[in-house]
Length: 361
Image (cartoon, rainbow, N blue to C red; front, side):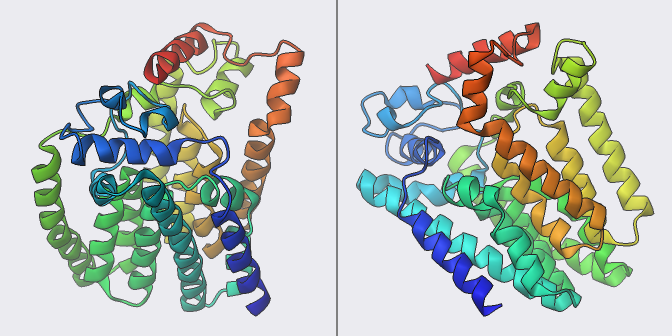
């Protein structure tokens, strides 16, 4: 365990010193923060383009996209707007790496509570190449959601149900994806008094969060609609649509995948005895349904697969990791360009590319 811990720490520190690859998400976070805190424009109703002369504009990418990020995360970034851009940049990097290490520590804690081998669980997640290359080195805000989510699991295992509910609500306020864990935490506590305590904790945490969010953003919500309409080349709906010769990830096919997620969640909730496996399969279904599929989303699945008892779920997680690595390698893009292969050469793909170009202008 000591060797694994040293390796995880060393890799995180090395990645801390690296630039955020070719990705610009970190600067988009700062762009929305400065838009709201410095320029007094609601990032859920305005776009980064409206701060054209701000120094962050040249580093950001989604210039015409209203913020898709969770309101609590956006609120947490507001103080960064009053700092020089290089200082804010490094604080986001430091916070991301610190949360990555905290996330690994929580996986170790949960494995011990469940009687699993913590060495395997930590290595399976924290040494995963996508975890390192995309989630950590991309400095993505997913860790701001994953840490309170894992804390909620650890607290449920420790029978601290009110605190678990509160932490889960924090995770949901950071990124709505975390709501998928709620039914399975309810399943985990089983008896009604504990379920009530869990929901009471969530409700009590929701009150101050709602007040804060309303005070800053009113009734505006994250702009998930436009982002969910975009396609990536190798998102599962687009690949399935191409294989079925229906035109890639069409709106109808995306709706079918969304219904499938609801069916999977319902099935896992009502039939599963192992709630961690149920949460894992439901998360896998969610990832598979996304039109805009990017590699670091697999990190949502990895801790559930590592801590659960399903060998098949771990195998599929590994296969998904390999698939996403090859799909997003620069050499893959070069090969497809050289051989005139374009998975988005469909009506749905053209509509997605046009929208993406409009949002980035």
